[in-house]
Structure formats: structure tokens, C-alpha cells
Image (cartoon, rainbow, N blue to C red; front, side, top):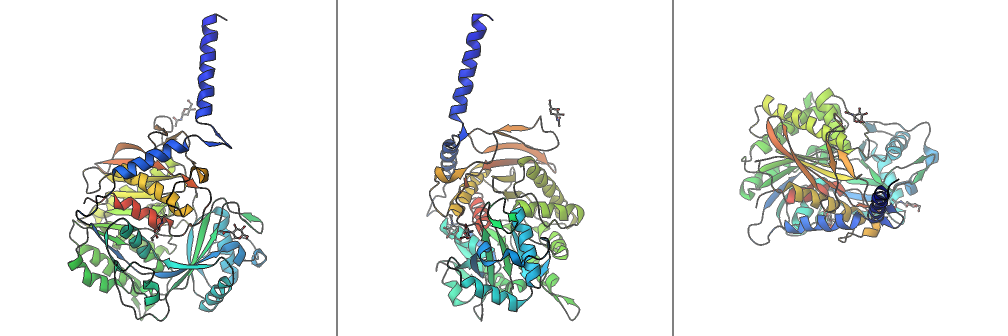
Length: 487
Ligand SMILES: *[C@@H]1O[C@H](CO)[C@@H](O)[C@H](O)[C@H]1NC(C)=O
Ligand SMILES: *[C@@H]1O[C@H](CO)[C@@H](O)[C@H](O)[C@H]1NC(C)=O
Ligand SMILES: *[C@@H]1O[C@H](CO)[C@@H](O)[C@H](O)[C@H]1NC(C)=O
């Protein structure tokens, strides 16, 4: 071997060693964390909303509830699991509940289910209140997103019917319309679990939550009319439609009338009543009732500018649009390429609905949040601004929310995203994006449905000491929207 090549060889191995030291992922931590954090924070601060100039306005519907956070494995007894974990659309007894919970627990997948047995539901709430760590909070997509917008300096109008007690959780500056003649707020039981928790023979692959409810107010969207009365005067820049999942598996036909379809027609009318300069966003959720999902594809989705959702909801929506079938559980940590393919497909199919229904609005934005990354697709030259910064902000919000701290602590962070990812599963080799810690948010352009779109993917500094999981999606979706609406 000649001297020169020997020398070259050692320089090369020296560089490899340096690289390994610089970006090593061992017990001392992933060296990518610090530059990723710094650059995400920079992107966020660079795009802060200038305060005091003109406050943007958001109106949000529908509903609110009282969330009861419970340690799932402390409340439930694995001995009560008779048979194998199984999914049910609706829960009527304890056996179904335990089977259903375990089914999602072992997949680490988020779920929301209706428990039709009020007596059992009340009993479970009572049992939960005996546990030391059980706590109450305000819940519902609309109030949680409302609070996030308020914290970001927006003027907020919230459509929700709730008791005075529940209203006390909401800052006074947020206008609430929808009435307060409520005897009992709807309670949502949020059964939380961490990564690697054990429940009988099963182990959770990731931290998540299983939500169970027995709602009476929310399924009727009882605040819809009152919100509608306030909209003309308020004149929002953004209208957020959420909480429709409370209509899932609710017995809705009465004297031959389909009440649910009637209520959803009114949701459509409410969106259509707004000028096109008011952007409409639909927040997806965990739906299982195919009839309801099909209503969404004809009464809501054709008329909105934007849709936000997590990876489970994306797979489900994609399947409903493509095959008319519900997916009950999907990969809780999908590859970027898989999620992006589903986003493109969903985009194209909703665009087709825009045409089929002669809608004046066209879908121009999709935000998907997953444990490992945030992906936002926007149409260029649409009303949406700052997609890259929005992805960064959504990513930081995910960490802050789950760790329940404003500070991004590197000691409590990890990155699941690899050093490169494919942008599609169709052609793994030609579409790699290299993930650089100093430029953590990758953005590129594509053409979809004849429009040029920008897609941005931001890695999440995953909080390894999960404090909170329920409501994360609301904070994240709202945080993503905050920077995207022109002020
Ligand atoms: C639930 O309680 C168990 C036992 O105390 C604990 O190990 C686990 O971390 C708790 N889970 C959550 C989500 O707090
Ligand atoms: C999430 O939003 C709620 C308002 O709903 C707010 O109180 C909380 O501080 C937010 N959490 C983070 C970490 O941003
Ligand atoms: C990617 O490259 C590998 C190795 O060169 C090859 O085996 C594989 O078939 C390629 N895949 C695609 C989708 O082109």
C-alpha cells in the first residue's frame, strides 16, 4: 500500500470518527438535539406575531367538556380482560370496554369511544376519583384550541354550551356563546399510559391516551345556532370546525328523521355563510362510524380550506375517501414517506370533492402531526403563509405540551427521525431528503392537482418524560395555524 493512500485512509477514518463523535447517538445523547432545538426556536421567533398591530380573530365550534385525567393501568384491572383485545364501535359493558382499551393500548394508538351505559360510566368516574393522581381539566377541541389562540394574542369567539364552573377554566377575554343552562357538563374520561407500561400480558409501544365519554350536549352541537348569530359581527379571519366526533355512534334517528344529517347540514350552512376571506379549518378526530364519516366527506370536507389531524386520523380519512372503509388502528409511528403519500392522496381526493360539490373553497392546506415529525402541505399562492415556520412551531409545541414545560430540555428530548427520509414510498431512491440538524425543517415544492404545493417536514424533539398526551393535538394544530394566517 502506498503512503498516500494510507494517509488518505487515515484521514477518512479520522473524519468518520469525528462525525461519529459529533453526531453520536449513545447514552450521552444525540448530538443533533442541540442544533435542532436552536434552529427550530430561531424559526419560531423570527416569525412571532407582531403584537398590537391588528389582532387576528378566530371563531371556534363546537362544544366543551370536563376532562377527567386518569392513570389507565391504575384504574383498570387486567384480570377483567376475558378473552383477547378487540375493537368495538360503541361500548355497552365493562367487558367490551376492557377489550377495547387493551386493543388500542397494545398498539399505542389514540382512540375515543362512546360508552352508552351511563350507569357504568358514572361508576368508572367515581372509581377514578378515588385514585391519587386523577385530575380535572377543561376539554374539547374547541376550548383547547381557543386557549392556544388566545395565548398567541388572537381575539377568540368560542361556541360551546357549558356550566359556569367549566367557564371558569377559560380566560375572561374569550367570548363564549352557546348558553349555560347545563345541569351537568359532559365528562370525558382520559385514560393515560406511558411508553412501556404493562397491562396484564400487554405492553404499550408509546405513550398515549384512550378517551371514553357518555355525552348528551356535545353530540347535538347545541352551540351551533348561538355561534352562528355572533359570526357576522365578529367577522373572523379563521373559522375552526371541531368536535363533530361527539356525534359518533350516537342514536340519532328520531321519528324517521336523521337528526345528525340535519345538524351537519347546518354546519355546512355555517361555513358557507362566511365570506371566502374567512379561512375555514376542519380538525379531524378519531371517528369510527362510517355513516358519520361519509357525511363529513359530503357536508364538511368539500367546503373547508384546511384540515388538521394525527397519523391515525390521516390513515382513517384516507381509507374512507378511497375505499369507503374505516381503519380502526394504524401504525402509531409511520414513516415520513407513508404519511406524505397519504397526504397527497387525501389532498387529491378532497380536491375532487371540491369540484363534485361545486364548492367555492378549495382545499389548500393539510397539517399532519405525528410523534416523530410535523408535516404541513400548503398550496403556493394560497392564503396560507410561513409554512416552514409553522411546522417548526408545531414541533416545539408538541414537545412543550407533552413535557408540560415552556423550556425545551435536551435531557428530556429525543429524535426519532433518521438522518434522511424518502418523500414517497413509490421511489425510495430518487426522493431522499437529508435531514441536517442545522436546517431541521425540510421544505420542497411539488405539483398536485395542477397546483404548485409546498411541503415542509419538521422533526419533533420528542418529550421522553411524557406528562400530558390528551389535548396535545389541539395545541399543536392551533400552533400550526397561528403563523399561517396573514395578519
Ligand atoms: C400509572 O401508575 C403506575 C404505577 O404507579 C406508574 O408506573 C405509571 O407511570 C403511571 N402512568 C401514568 C400515565 O401516569
Ligand atoms: C396548551 O394549550 C393550553 C390552552 O389550552 C395552555 O394552557 C397550555 O399552556 C398549552 N401548553 C403548551 C405547553 O403550550
Ligand atoms: C433502490 O436501490 C436499491 C439498491 O441500489 C435497489 O435494490 C432497489 O431496487 C431500488 N429501489 C427502487 C424503488 O428503485
